[in-house]
Structure formats: C-alpha cells, structure tokens
Image (tube, rainbow, N blue to C red; front, side):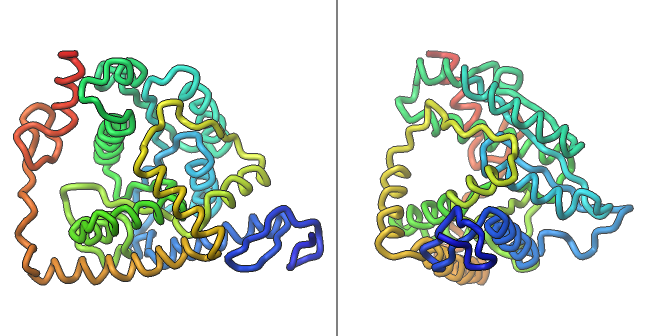
Length: 326
C-alpha cells in the first residue's frame, strides 16, 4: 500500500476520506487539521500582545492526546510572545499508572522548555483514587469521582494562573461519544451549554466570568491517527489505560459509534458536524429567552471551598465528606 501523496509506504488508511498516508503525510494531515481548528475557533485572541499575552493552560496527562496537543501547540506558538502556555498534570493517586505517565509529561515539558506544574489529589484533597475505588462510598464508577476532582483542579489552577483558556486533548472519538450521549439523553440544555463551554468559536460564545473557557483543538482528529502521530514523531507517551476506567454507558456508546464508523466511514465526522450546528442553534435559542431559559439555577460559592456551585456545598466537597465518612 503506497501513500497517495508521495508513493512511499503507507502506514494508515483513512476510510472516511479514502486516503492512504505515509508517516510524514499523516503527520502533516494531523497538524493541518489542528491548525485549522485553532484558526476557526479563534483560539488566539486577536487583541493579544507581548505585553498582554493570551494565557493558556494545557491539561497534560502523558497520554497520546494531551502529548500530541502540547507538542503541536508548542510547534505553532512556542516562540510567539503573544501566548503564554502552562502544562498542568494531575496525579490522581493510581499506583503503577500515573507515575509512569508523569514521567512522559516531565520528559516532554523538559524537551519543550515548557512551564509544567503537577498537582495531586493527595495534596489537595487528602485522598488517592486507589483508596476511593476500594471504599466506593457512593456506589458509583471510579470515573464519576475522578471526573469531579479533576475538573475542580483544572479549573482552580487555570484560574490561579489567570488563564484565558483551558485546553484539553479530546479527540474526534471522545467528542462524538459525548454528542451521542447528549442526544440519547435528550439534554438540549446541555447541548447548548456545550457550545459556549468548549465547542463554539471564541468570538461566537457567550462569555462568562464563572469558569475559564475551554477549547479542544484535536476534536477533528480520530483517536487512531493521534496514536500514530505520536509514534511517527517518537513523542514520550504513556499508552496504558487507567485500570479504574469503567464508564459502562460511555463504553456502550463507544462500541456503537465504532461499529457505525466501520460500516459507514465518516459517521463520526457527520455526528460532530450536525451536533456543532445544533449546539449553536440551541445556545442562541436559550440566550434569546426560550421557554426553559430561566431553568438553570444561579451559581454561588461553595461555603466550604469557594468553588462555583448551585448548592450550598459543591459536589466535590460532598464527595469528600462521603469518602471521609466511609
């Protein structure tokens, strides 16, 4: 099998486009799509200057997605004085997993001379995920605990860095799964929120001072291609999956989308194209005062930690209380 662009040996066949690509042209293809997404989302504030730069926090886990994102952003913006970047790694306390991925994070950050901060559940919350999984006081999946704690730390440290944007390595497969879950749950409000939180171009979103806005520059690139990209560039990457990963519903959706993609190449791209258009329309409807426009509870500060919450005590603090009592 030869590369369609140069005739060298191909390492990948993209069924959705019909393209056979060698390592070099796969690399160029991935980078081209990420750069296009950066432009289309107006990731770089047009008013940013060396004296008043755009500040970005990149969630760097050491996995293929966050490593590829960090490398590409550094390639494009590493020497741009209009941008300040900080890589943030969160250590959950999972023996034999996060320590190895942390090594990949440290190696990459050193290679790029990138500012790198590491925070841990143990230091911040006095818990480790291995212990939480064992006690499981709420009788729920490990990811349900971990997602709450991770989001809190990402948001807290992005705000502490005075970040303008929080960037994560969600790929096309991740986003298509989320879109499908929101469709199947009939959660139109969540679809609308998704646009302003992380999908819409920054010049089209409704701004808020409550949370640091997020961006997902890899969301046009399939997971497999990102893995191949890291291999081609020989990037320090930890490929193992979390031993506590057990999101049963998302796993079912993942299998369904995989089967759709196998039988109908391009299904993931179609799901996201339609979802992004619908999310923009939903966001506009809610902004204009649709029937459910006033349903969202007002956000205040958690009386324990000060995080934004619709209740007196935030979800993170309630989970920590439950874990402590177990």
